Amino acid sequence: MKKVLLLMLMLSAVLTVSAQEGEWMSQTIQGDELKGTETTVAHYYIQEDMGVFVFWDNKNGFAISSHKMFKSTVSNGDTGSLAFVGLYDNDGNLKEKMEIWMILERGSDYKRLFAVETRNNPLVKGHKKNIKKILDAVRSGDGYVRILAGRYQTTDFDIKIPPFKE
Image (cartoon, rainbow, N blue to C red; front, side, top):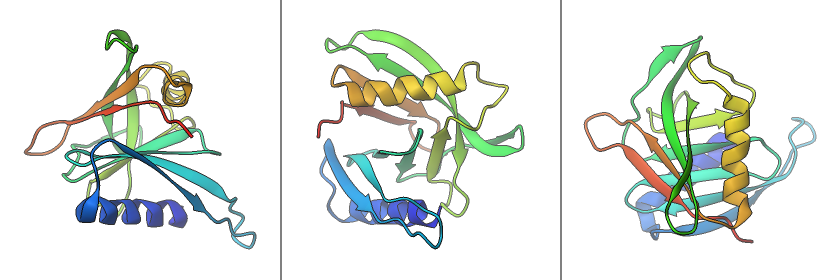
């Protein structure tokens, strides 16, 4: 978890210094056998005016990070936010829309949310299947994924994520 936090802090620094709109970047995060963590590669999409979307090669989940604070609530023991996700085809037509529960990262000043398969919430049906669909769409090479999440005293977090191409 510390490596994820470190990566998200680095991403925040990149955003504030010189992020370019619409750029995919990847970074290897070294594992630590003493801590029991595996080496993984994090892939993140930076949209300068909005924030970051990140997913990892060996994890079934993703995160979003914003310049502004996300709205949050407590549900089923987790502090988080309901986000709306659309899967679009290459022509910009909505193929499917869904809701997912995203967990607020503690210590992030309300600026990072995680979506993981293992954390179901009664507010959302098919959560695990939806996370898989989103990650499959990002990795597929077709269309794009759009994520909307509420933020305090500003416009909603609204990012269009094109497919990741290695």
